[in-house]
Length: 253
Ligand code: FES
Image (cartoon, rainbow, N blue to C red; front, side, top):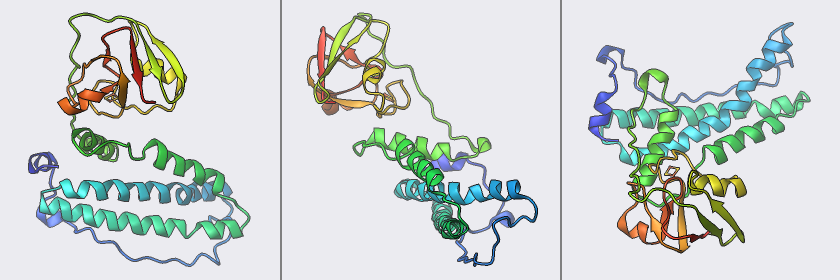
């Protein structure tokens, strides 16, 4: 993140500035009853959900913000982010420590926490992107998801290049999956592939983020993105926008 980006964020006036520093906290839960809001089991468990939800979410904050740190050049912002990482790590641990107590009270949080873990680690987790522009943009999107609405991260996306030749239909062979899919003129390679392989990673669907990049083993590519380097274009394509020039292309997937 450059000084220019940081400068666009509203700054607190100096007198309101509170340095972020993780407080070491520790709680003793053993005397806490099952319904700790007296006579209010529903309210108790609604608040208990925070102990299930927050540990994985806060671990995710820590993981993403650690990756962002080397890109921050504004010293004050850097100090805030370091403080935030420490605070979130401490919160995550404090919420985690409640879970054994819930188990002792006969509540098994695992079915819920397993889903939250899946959400944080798989759905929001790292994309296997090589270092470079695509990875940096993914990181900025990941951070942007955590900003409050009033501090929106402004990302501009431009429509990918259009082909002078228009769209044609072609076949895509998925070599590792031993399948072949047809890509009609009015659909994308990504959509056709996802019909067969629903877990195929993607994000922007505009040839912008690089998440859908796939290696091409055979066939001529009609690149329609503005993201890949010339070297990357030699053997890979962004399947959300780019197409085959001929009637067949083979992808390593
Ligand atoms: S999904 Fe973003 S480039 Fe294809």
